[in-house]
Amino acid sequence: MKRSSVSPIPTQINLVIAGTTITVNAAALLVLPAFGSSVPWMLAATAGAAALLRPTHWALIHEGIHGLLLPGRVANERLARMLAILFGVPFRAVRFAHLRHDRYNRTPWGREEVYDPTTRSRGLPARCNLRITFGLYVCELALSLLCWLPRPVLRARLRAQCPDLRDEAAA
Image 1 (cartoon, rainbow, N blue to C red):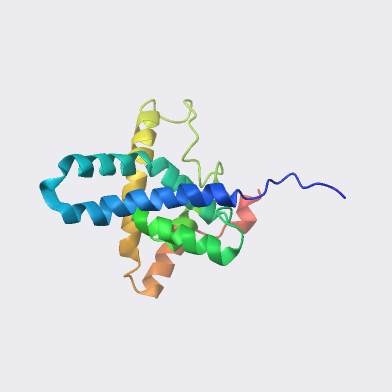
Image 2: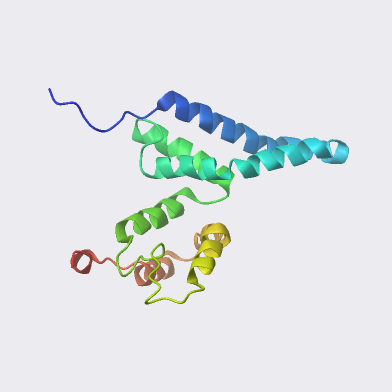
């Protein structure tokens, strides 16, 4: 019998990391503000810890997007959705945007991460880093507002921004 080259999902590790992330974020968002200014150092420490956990927090959401956070689709999506809520972004919209990024990555329609100095200005790497560091999060937050658009308007905008390029993408 041939062994699979795919590693099993590290469920226990993912649950510990997700639990820590959820606890720190819940404390920073819900518990500590209830104490007001009586413990400013604790508020600053917890908010700092939550900020330091942001890359790990996103990594957990990323694994959830790809179905690799927990075994079983329902459990995976529920935990990923909870993590996305604490991250401040709508899970379905972020999943759609990220999977689109994966699908068109390095094609003419998705070259956000490619820098060719012969075709792009020298200032582009700095702008790309600023966009990834700050703009991406702002755009993810803006996705929350799109949920209020009427479906026909939303679908037309999505088709314009994210065309189905099945025939052209293979070329």
